Length: 207
Image (cartoon, rainbow, N blue to C red; front, side, top):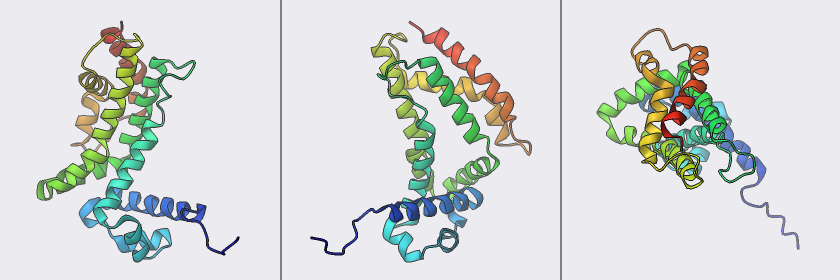
């Protein structure tokens, strides 16, 4: 019997959620955590502040959801390890290219600088960022490498350490220098370096 009640989590709810996260991403990445305005996020996404707090409860939860979604977009380049035709080299190149594309965006670099400054005053904000973002990506990359070890694609190793080595090969000093310079890194140059970084990684860890 049709009671006339609409089901929960209907598509319109998902659209609103994505709109909120889009607006929150722009607000957090442009102004940092402390200066980000829930009022602005509500206005840009076309919802009320009450709707935002009903869905995300706190500013911290909303921030974590934004960072988690960005990481989900990046980790989506990982093909299921056991899927037919998967190739570790191509997976790692795709990961590196996606990571470089994301990290070299000017608003993302501004956001990282602000988070670093805010973490001095509010360490919990730094922990939110690390748990929702970099640590999650490290876990997923580590899991991919562990799968490669189990299949004999790379030799047995400390896969978490290996994930750090790969990250360092891809980003190198260029990303570090860019955080303290008026001139950002050259995304095109970094993209071109990704296959070489992956090949050097596989030369070192290949079975």
